[in-house]
Structures are given as structure tokens and as C-alpha cells.
Length: 104
Image 1: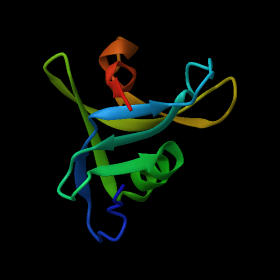
Image 2 (image 1 turned 90 degrees about the vertical axis):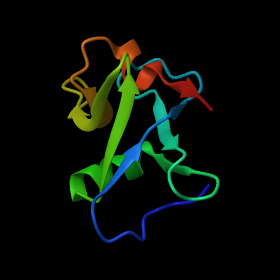
Image 3 (image 1 turned 135 degrees about the horizontal axis):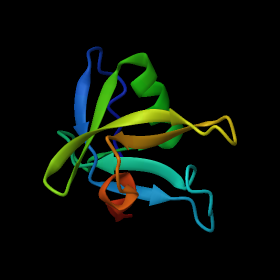
């Protein structure tokens, strides 16, 4: 899939699907990556690590449309494992955020 990492300014990307880590049951670390259609042929896909770095660097803003609400994808920290993961803001029900998207 295409990567938009050559962009030099902040870009909004709409996330339309996720890839989950097979057989992974940790609720905070089951997303392998996120993707969407975008403006490039074949769409775009970023691993969770790439997306976290992109958010922290201010390169991309990722968005999810769920239950009629546009939610920003943010980086959160697992207090138990002390590691970063992706979630949406606000996320009152995980099924309405990233984990509610189609899987590919």
C-alpha cells in the first residue's frame, strides 16, 4: 500500500479499517495498523508504531467516523504495561472507536 510519509505539513487522514494482531488478547495492544482510502491509489496503511510516531511528530491527524461522530485518534499510555497504543477521543465505548471499524 502507499505511504504518505513524504508530506511536509499536517495532513488529516480518515481511518476506515484496522488490522488486528492475530491471537492477541491485550485490549490496548491488539491493533497492528490502521488504513484508509485517502488521495493515493490503493489507499494508505500505517502500522500502529508509525501512526503513533506520526501523531507525536504532528505529521498526521487521524480521524474515525463512528455513530455519526468524527473522533480524533490519539496516543494513550497503558498504565499496566507502560507502553503506547492508539485510541479515539472521546471513547466512551471501544466498539464505537477504532475497534469498531472493519478489519482487513
